[in-house]
Length: 163
Image 1: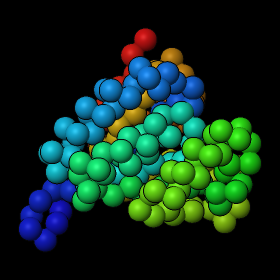
Image 2: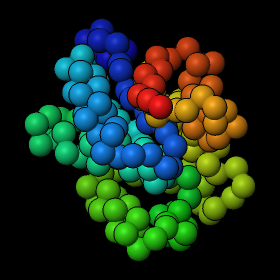
Image 3: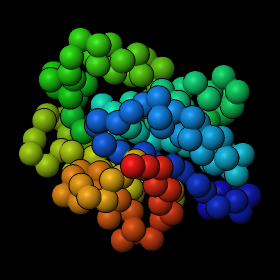
Image 4: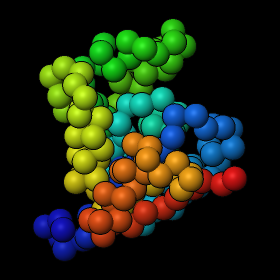
């Protein structure tokens, strides 16, 4: 809650790496605009490919119309380690997002077996709303794990996934 008594509505993103960005961009943009108009101004993304990238790019694009919104990247490990397995195109996208984010936080000093899970926990610990692209048939995925954390915390989950 803010000093003025407003309930904070910070938003975190989680989603699968392999998505059709053209399919999800319009509904994500509409959803984020509705959240912004309802008071959300802080957005957290994890820096992964796929939905994380789309979400971060969409927040950056929306800053043109809503300059007060903030994008924070919660990175599981240092950028050069996280991007080490990306294609050249993915690395270019990743570093462009890093340049345009308001700030970034590195969760673990080096890549480790649990750094993704720690990043996912941090995404949920900072949020009141989780916007996701979660195919429930992929229950054992990191996205599934993060959505379950959100549900267990009792925060609102907005799932944009469509078959």
